[in-house]
Image: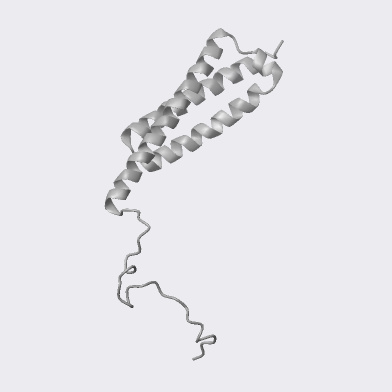
Amino acid sequence: MPAPAQIPRIQELLTLAEDRSRSLSAALLEGQADRVALASSDLQQVVEVLSGSLRQPAWRASLDGPAASRLRRLGQDLVQQREACLRRSALVDRALNSLLPASRATTYGGGTTPYGQQARRSGAFKLISA
């Protein structure tokens, strides 16, 4: 049987993780990158502590039905937030690509004139001195 102090600790960590998850969701909806970074860092710290606590058999045994369902819901929220971050990243990449297209073509090279070809080393100058 887990110690009585362990049960409130799990509940506190779950509540804290849920609060951090809600703040991350709000930051994702607002689209503010700095708030997303801060909220995700805070959530990651809480989830690491919660995960470490649940690795101990005594703590895992302290999960009752409602706490286990809260933990599952938190996991589902994390999956949705990860997908939202990936979608946001794709939107940013598309917007960036529309401003600065990513291409393998060089800007000043590739012409048919001697000045438009890629520069090649002739090997004539092996030492440069001033």
